[in-house]
Image 1 (cartoon, chains in turn red, cyan):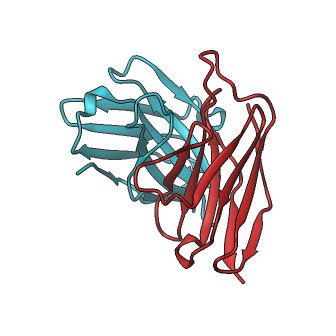
Image 2 (cartoon, chains in turn cyan, brown):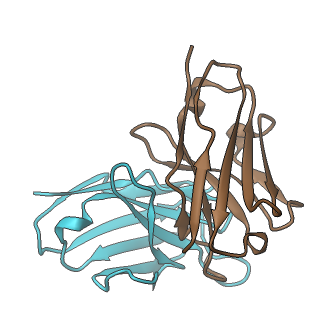
Length: 111
Length: 120
């Protein structure tokens, strides 16, 4: 199975400042069709996850443009340009290239 | 409006069985793969199983193979997860989810989840 490793596991940030989360896969996520099925989710306590980004960098409908995704192969990054209070919670990366696996999650908290 | 509503979660003893249901509405259910994802208390997300549109293809995470069975009834717009030989480590909130954006392979619709507790 592909193992997804996120860093950091916890990220204290100041409101209005940028934040960045890394996700590394144990093997390339490039699928046979040329696409890379790497997604990012945000989850608040007691809520289901919410899709932010799919196929590395495609922002899902309704997601603010302060969220962006980048990367290729085995290394991927989620960036928040200016953190807002509603961004607190846990962020997960997920791959759907070979079976389906999630990263262990990164907790974003306000300093 | 798309809705996924899970039910069937309960407290069950180790070795017991439980059947979860996910009722879908607001979209053409028979056109979509459906998935179950679980989250143990205070832990991360784990994909459990999925099923294709007509139920002919099913996949499972290794830890549940031989114990869990996913199925669907397109006439009832529902997907199910039959869980047998339950273990303490199966304790989790179970979500059903779907991919709606063609070609995205990303879960963009989720239910609120149903809690399964395996404890004696």
